Length: 290
Ligand code: FES
Image (cartoon, rainbow, N blue to C red; front, side):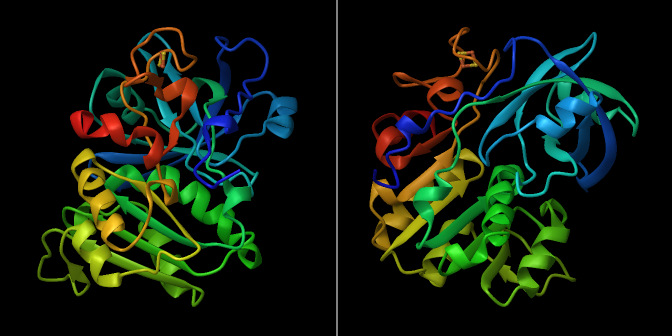
């Protein structure tokens, strides 16, 4: 199976009734930026806490009782089992309600849903992670997963950017990866400020400057649509084929299980056929969507 042949990697691991939310408890809240928050959580049911499994790239449906439900990727790594994490950008009714919660609050969770990053097919390869803003959330699940299995992978480049230093998410991860001598970590912002000493420039441009080799490599991309739109051509310029480029799309999902039709991308459903796709799978319709 080629690295990009991920259409067959659908792993539908929802446990029991797919519509039944389990009660989970928020046990830590981290304000990443003024509009983005990470929640650490765990299942209230101890048996479920021990038995729950997921893979990097999968997502869940999170419900605030009396308000509604919304999908977010599981942003923690399956290699670190003491708790789960998801990150939320405040953009609507459910996300605003989530931002009003405190530690100890109970919410609903159902999942995990969707396919996953083909981590087993990435073994022995060079990995290039390209992220923008909160788009680092799904990537960081895979990055920590790879770091926890570091000897199975070759070179690792991470290019991550945001509009400004204040918009950089997961600063504690960026620091850890920057200190890791086995990782080439590049952080950039579109606009710096007086305190910023790092790179300034859009992610696709900085990626071209970093120029990670395409040979025996896989690029994993997630970020705002405008970044994704310009990152694929930048990778192509560097010699990456559509089969070597992978992204994750969580757009417009509602039911999460292929029933409502809200998340279609061409003839694919992001929830059922993805959210992880190779560029080879989606390039024919991504230009009208992104
Ligand atoms: S979210 Fe309902 S079909 Fe994908």
